[in-house]
Image 1: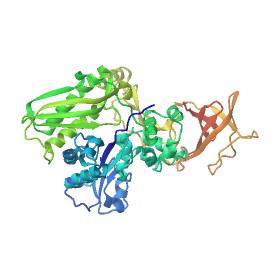
Image 2 (image 1 turned 30 degrees about the horizontal axis):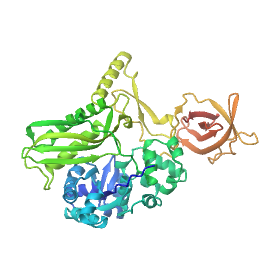
Image 3 (image 1 turned 135 degrees about the vertical axis):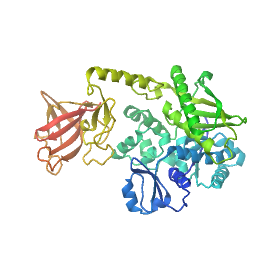
Length: 522
C-alpha cells in the first residue's frame, strides 16, 4: 500500500514549437503558415498551416499543394533548443527548478510556485504572462503525475487532486504516444495494436488487468498503464547518487564559441557515461552547469523518459550551451565559460537502458566495428552483414542484409504505405523453408482464400505433417497482389494468423501450392 501524498506537477507546453522557432529565426509574421519537415515529411506545422489543411506526416509536396504559400524549413533541433532558452529563462524568473523534457515542454514541482502565488490558477496565469512577455504562447496543466500533467497542458486543464484517471479516461488511446519525451519510440506501434484490438480510449486501456498488460507488453507500456490508472508512474528512487559520478571539465582558455563548448561537452558526456557504466547505473535526469570567468553560474536540468545514452547526453549539453552562449536573454553570460559540470540528479539500474549488442558506452562500438572489419577482410566483403529494416508486406522481405561498411539503406521505404502489410507485432521466428500445412473447416473441407480475398470457411483444424491441432482463433486474411504487371514475378497470396490449442500462434501463407507456415510467434 502506498500512502505517499501526491506531489503535484506543473507542465508548461508551447504548441508547435519547432514551427515557432523556425518562424522566429526567419523573422516571419505569426500569420505565415510554416511547416517543419524531416525526411521529406511534415513533423510540425503552425496553426495557420493546419487551417489550410497541412498535417503532420504529410509529404512535403502534398503539404505545399494544400497550401501554396507555405513556408517550408528543415528540422533543426539546435535552433529549437537555442531559441527555447529565452522562454525557459522567463519561466525561471517566476518559478525556479525548471526541468526541460524537450524544447517546447518543461515541468516543475507545483508546490513552491503555488505557495508563492496562492493557488494553482494564479500560478498558471503568472507563468503564461511571463512566457507571453517573451513573445510566445503557452498552455499550462497541473496534475498528480508528470505524464498526466503534460497531457493536461495540451488541454490547458488543471486536474484536481486524485482525479487523474478520471481526466484521462475519455481521451483517445493515441494520447499515450502523443508526447515523444515521455514514451519509448515503440509505443506508437503499441497504440496501433490497441486500436486494432478495439481499445479506443485511455479509460478502456486502464480497465485491462495489470497482470495481462505486464505479461504481454514491455516495461514502457506497463508504465503507461499505471499512468492511465492514475497510479504513481515510478516509485521514489532510494538509490543514492555517488559523488564520483559528477564530472567536470576546466576550460583553459575560457570558451566563448559554441563549437568549442560542444566539443568539450561531448568529451565530458563520454566520461560521464564511462563512470555510469562502471557503477552499473544509467541517468534519467541530468544537471548541466557552466561557470564563467565573471563568476556567473548557469544551471539547467534535463529530464528524459528513458535513460540517456552518450549521444543523447552530448546533444543536450550542446543544445544548452548553444542557448546560453547565443541566446538573447538576461541569462546570457558576460564572460567565457571556465568550467563545465555534468551531474546525474536521478539514476536507475543500468538494466533499464537498452544497450546495443556491444553496450554502446564509450568506444565499445568502435572496437566492435574494427573487429568486424578484420573478419570481413579474412572472409570477403559479403561475408559479414548487418540487418536493416526495409519496406515490404511480409516479415521476411522486410529484413535487408547489408555488408558491414556499406551505407545502411533499405531497398524500399519502410514507412511507405504497403497495402496488405502484416500488422505488428512480427513473428519471433521466420522459417527459411516454409513447411506445408492444411487448414480444414469444422466439417473437414479444406479452407482456401477466394479471389475476393476472403476465407472459404472458418478454420477449425490445422494439420502439420502427422500432427493436428484445434484452431482456437484466427485473424486475417491479409491479401497480397504483387507485381501483377510482370508475368514472371506476379504473386497472389494471403497471410493468416492462427491461434492453436495450447496458445501457440502461427503465421501461415496461402499461395498457389496451398498453406505454408511462414513464421511462429513467441
